[in-house]
Length: 225
Length: 194
Image (tube, rainbow over all chains, first blue to last red; front, side, top):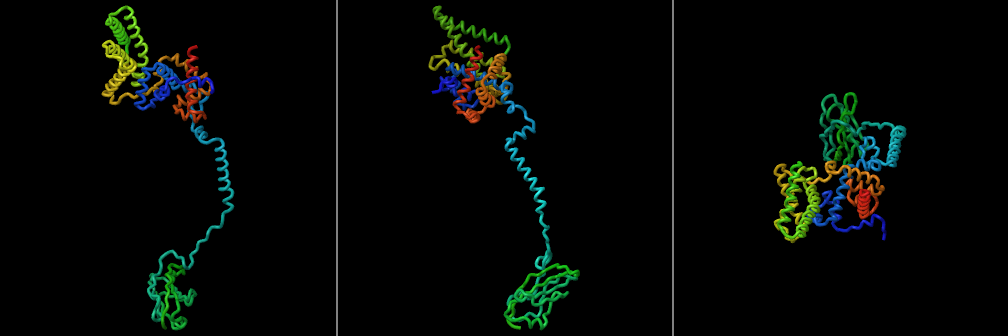
């Protein structure tokens, strides 16, 4: 068993444990009342509490002077710079500085050299911003006879249209017109076979030749010529 | 409290002691014994009552000394009337009288102030230190303590950390914290006696 000075201060009364909590108002009411009644009857506890009260009072009143040397950094008013510095440990500051340097190197040294060519944007025949052309006929898949004409909704004046007829994805025939319909010539009709799948599409161009609208592609087939 | 009032209470207390002696009207030995007992009661319990009153209504409250005097007069009156029958200890008897008077005081003040005074033992420490010279001595004695005792006093009493928090901060057991506080107090007491 150790016999140093600290342990020689043996407790004589179980209520001694209440002293500090009583002085700091940490006891609940029943505990406080029990302890108060106790120290009216126990001169040992009262004497000890009075001494402790005096000690705490002095520590509280003169703590900033008493502990100024050892604990000045914790008690003194810090400037904003000191508060910022104290926010991280020196090791953490070192890591933060290295990280910041790396970020700057990457941002201004490496990334500009890795700069790729600007992406090119273009409008192909299938991607057009603007209005579309509504196809009117034929829009039914299975036709009894080969269509004699193809009709679509007009987009107004000063518009040129181009009709495309595809045979299984391959362009079979194409023609331009200012009207909103096309009549098929007999030559073209002779190129087309009953039961085979075809599709048609119309594109609209301005008078300057700029693509301004595209219709959807509609499939069709016919039973006989 | 002014000096005249203090003198008045002193006279009342003295008169009660004499009255008590004459009431018994016994032998000289009995009179002397009773007088000593009464004085002992005052000497022993006045500091205890004062502490309790200051803790409850605040040492900064100017009325605290009046309240203590009223309690002591009341105690002696009740003893004279034979109201203390030994059913409880004299300490408990005085504690009960003290508690009732404090409650009455707080109720009276509550009617005026709407809020009862809350105990705030260390909020105005400068007012609380009655003997400034003694406080200086204690402060110097604390400064001379070894760092391990000083740091415990700093964290436990100045920073008001819990015993467990102090123990964690200093990497010692909570029991060791109490031991260091007690030992620091013992050292201070020793220094103060020199």
